Image (cartoon, rainbow, N blue to C red):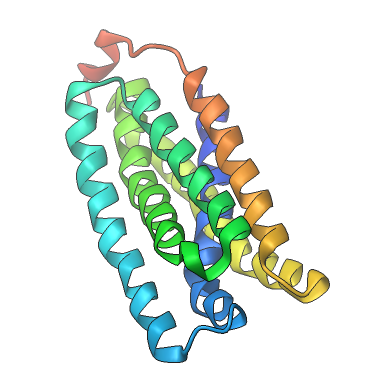
Length: 186
């Protein structure tokens, strides 16, 4: 379970974090005026908040890994749409980034507690968060490198959509929560 979560969180961090940094350059490459690119980039922050709130609400009423799978599938479709449609799909791209990155941060803590309880929560959360930070650190470099080698961001967007799709598969294969794990003594 730990390794599945680590893989899913790494995929999500690699897919979405770099686009946070490269979203405005991507839009500028698509010949949008700088002011319009910046305005569209501000939507990422709004959608990130929406993603966090939506994930939190949905975790209360549905099995969290399935919620994560749905959010990451929507994000994967959004990134693929951005790659295929260019600047015309910039709002969809902003939504995809915000949903995936916003939900991921809530998922780490929530799933860590649900799967592993509180006895070793700090240690396990720290390890999973380290995986997220590693992906977050590498992602902008990978986006930039792919853009430099190919001349556009499309390959990075398609690869990121694939990584989000891989996270969907991982989330769909997660086991149910064990009730006794929640009540583990400190």
